[in-house]
Image (cartoon, rainbow, N blue to C red; front, side, top):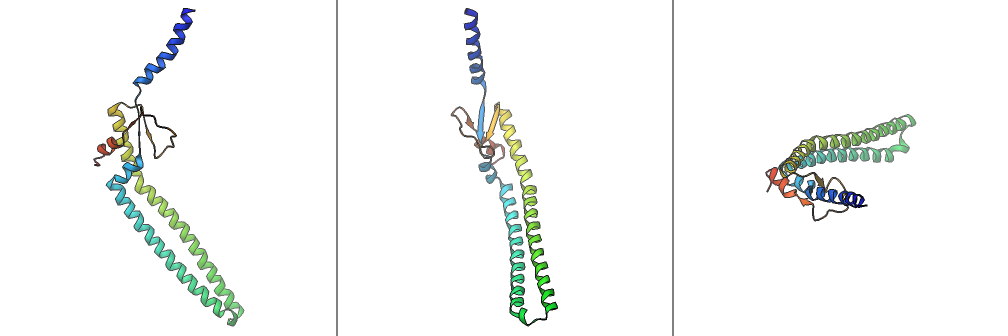
Amino acid sequence: MLKKIALIAALFILPLAAGAQAKFAHMNSQEVMTAMPEFAAAQTKLDNMAKEYQSEMQRSEEEFNKKYQEFLTQQDSLPQNIAERRQKELNDMYQRQMEFQQEAQQSMEKARQDELTPIMQKLDAAIQAVGQADGYIYIFDLARTPIVYVGKESVDVTAKVKTQLGIK
């Protein structure tokens, strides 16, 4: 009987003792990333690229609308074969617009990934450096992983990661 009590006590005490030594931390990568100068430069580059695509799409749409309105006003007075040819031209123009929008969206997504990947790698390296230097078992990123609860035992290392990156 005494052995059972000792075994049960050991089963409860060992995890508690191990948990007392475990160090957990959390941080917000979004807060750190938006403070990084590289992020601001990447965001500016992406914004400029988006404006260029938007401008080109608007120009193309205006050109299409102009030709479409011309077609509508002349449609009844045009011979059948010319009306069909212009309608085909309008359909082709519309199709090119849709393809361009899709290509622009894909290009923007690729550019975003190309710009943000090195920033994320630098951020991850800083998080790992802080974790290793301070002996944390885990550093949870509240911006990347939905965590319902963060206890007061968990240390917020957002400021330490900023310091590691040289951000004030």
